[in-house]
Amino acid sequence: MASHLLPPFPLASTSDGQLQMLGQVLWNWELCGGCNKQPVCASVGCPWNRAKRLGRFWDYYKEITASYVPELLTESSPALSTHEDLLNILRLLKAQPDTPRSQLTHEHFSRRADEEGKCPPISDQNRAFNLAIRVLLMVNCTVPHQYSGILESGDQCVPWHGSTSISQFIAEAFPKTDHPYLNDVEGSMKSVDIKYALMAKILKQRAELRFEATNNIYNHLKLDRKQGVVQIFHHSAVLKENLRASQHVQTAAKSSDFVKSGNMPRQLALEALDSIHKILFPPDPDSQSLLSSLVLRSSFDEDCLRFESTAYRADDEKDINFHFFGSRLVALHDELESPTPRGWLQKWLERKSGARYVMMATLVGVMIAVILGILGLGVTSFQAWVAYQQWKHPVTQTTPPN
Image 1 (tube, rainbow, N blue to C red):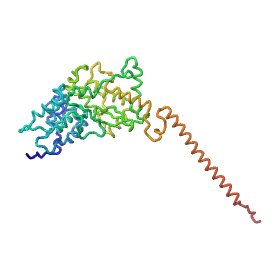
Image 2: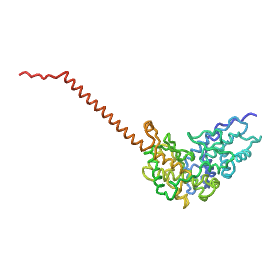
Image 3: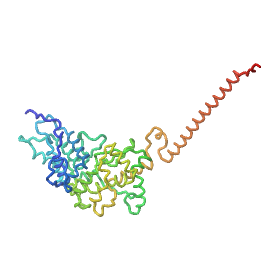
Image 4: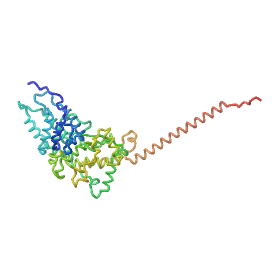
């Protein structure tokens, strides 16, 4: 049988109506009805009224779906022919968060088999589910031992095994840890000192770190010591939508409850927001100036400049501990205490920051002394040359005639 001639990019275009349906699937939006398929909504109570704030996320969705390429030479239909196909996978993942991936994949595509009972190739099925996870959780995942497709440069993919459900995937991707310096009540003063030291302006000045936006929450606060780069998950509008959607879910609830309501655990969303607004970029002029420059020049989400998550928090969520991103905050503090040498001069000097700066100051002093010595030698040489010329060619003074 001849293979189907399929368009190479079936999800290349996205309409406002499809984005509205996406919001309904991800965050259980209840639209007012008057803004159906419209770019904006004037109704204050309608979720589509916040569509502009989610501009970076819509751009992200359009980019990753437009890059989807099915198996072009196949006798069956592709895993994703329309955006509705992707939305159906998202609905399935949210409805059955405790079902293993392999079972979900088999059930979904078996129901979708064509008239001849043919399903898309396994590689295409996996590609579709990987794409769904990137939309649902904003985590890049892959089936072990399989190419995962076009991803952000340098992004790390989290393996999602066929025997693992999405709830288990979340737990494995974001293990909880406890750091006494950050979370212990007895060490609260030291915790405050550490958090204060981790302001982005201090990290930039003392550790010479730069900040890059990432669309992968798995890479949030990830430090590349060699390049001196800290990745920041900048989609604060998405985090707030997740908190809105899961307000009725208790903090101690199961991961499956969060997937059904707000996609990711509330603690994870709160830690990501607080690490941006309370630690890296607190509301002081210098920090806000730096954050504004990142929004303008480094494609950070403009919503990062809005400090307004208190409306989505429970009373016991005002001040949170850092269990998901605590280890990365500690790693940033360690880097601040002992910066990694990056330039050729710093690499030549000792690793420990105190010794390095002492040796650097000594070396600068020696270089200044050498330069001054050379300049002094030059002046002395010039004076000697002038004296020699005067001795060799004396100027005789003639007596003027009477």
